[in-house]
Image (cartoon, rainbow, N blue to C red; front, side, top):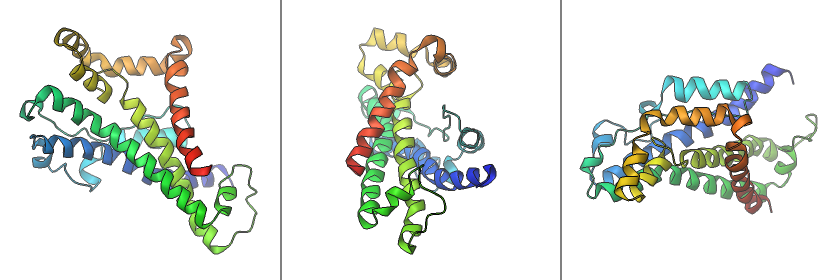
Length: 240
């Protein structure tokens, strides 16, 4: 298999789970906000599972495709953030935490569901596990059931990985990430006000943490090991 064939095969397995992960993340924010009194996302037409209103040409299409094609160890992508007016919420400080937690919570749920479905696939046809192995010979013959389930197995495996990554990345306690909003909602007023003050610079801080990790050693020491641990924990329940 040449490089272009490998890239197209990889994209065919990864783009659909990636789209689901990002779109359902934003849908969850909007649904919980609407439940607690803010209809902004619903009125803007964002309370839908139709991917089109959630797609950002740069964040949902260009950036993820570049990361996947270049096989970058650092993934970056996002859907259009759903609009939320926290003043409409019944209890703004408490409900802000729940709205923010809904996105990572959805990614966690998707990772678990993907693990369960992968376990079902491997129960139906155990040979799929060998077929998905990087050490499996490409010339190995498979029966029809295996050939049909191999793409699904790869999609579910990637779904676990990308949902764990999106969940933990968004839980970083830096506004405007979900983890930052959760932290602001949980802290006492003075500390919450100080943390929320860095929101205009939050994404720049995140980019610096990732770009200069070889010097700072923060992401490689804490974040990536946690991502690997969470992914392996779900996979061990699936494959074990």
